[in-house]
Length: 424
Image (cartoon, rainbow, N blue to C red; front, top):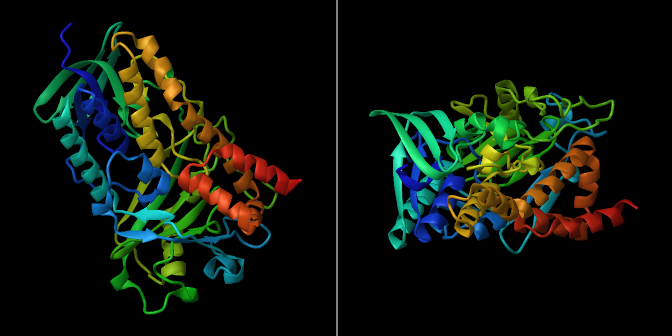
């Protein structure tokens, strides 16, 4: 059988580019597939944590719009009842209850996702000049995926007509709604659990002279009052604020005062029904004093990936493998790290020995999956009793440790030990 390339990668976002970058530098021939022409709009608040910036193979300083040294955490309503979006508390969160964290080093760097993705793709294509080759192809969709004993075949619809592509390995990096995830779900152990978020952008120029409650438009805000199992956010960029609401948490046994999230056996597994346009519009009015949001976009978030088991010749990465963090909703870091892990596994093995490649990918992915398993447990505990999390964040030592764990990727074992001491 004649192969078109060594590796096919479906999806040219952060996960696909991370894999393609390392493979090309190692001399591999890669075909990178995507349905969109870049730059393309992509719903995402695009806050880049320190661990994300560290994981990247190149600097993204040219596309950073703002660097945040401070974060504002706003608690749920009094009594721990999140989801009371119309309560008096949600209109003006008591400042005394907020946790404001300032750090010497940046907590998060802000970019616009379509610009960030386009920049990463450019850097990836440049990497091919140093070794292998990357061919970027636009397709309309993947129609059929066949896993053969010694290769992968993809039937794809393209603007030029139907084509069949062959490679030793396929990396599925086309997101939680992507076709590689759906086509391999039963055979490849891909989780079906998902979260959901809605967002909009509000230019600073359209904001009232004084924001409700006297808030600063440049605050980086995580607000746990609007809905159960998630939070609202304000991410300040160069000329606008990204505002959104999302549900991320796995199912948990909630107190009687809260609405219980669906059972973990439920395919939805998230209380995403609370994430509505009406909620976001109401939230924007409460936080920013604006009455309209001209363009609201939504995104499905691939979650539950701590249980992902790679099999065969299809390696799922990023959202396609369900690797969004269920506590924070962060997905870019997992996308980059899993893409690099898939590339490392391929480079470790003979391309024709698929059992070894799947096993190697599982080994390289293991540290990330352990972290996500911890986040899965932490999310269930936190969103069931957010007030306990805020108690920890009000303790200086715990606040520093939690921040380092989630911003820097500090091993979570240190955090577990500290939390155990706090609760005894």
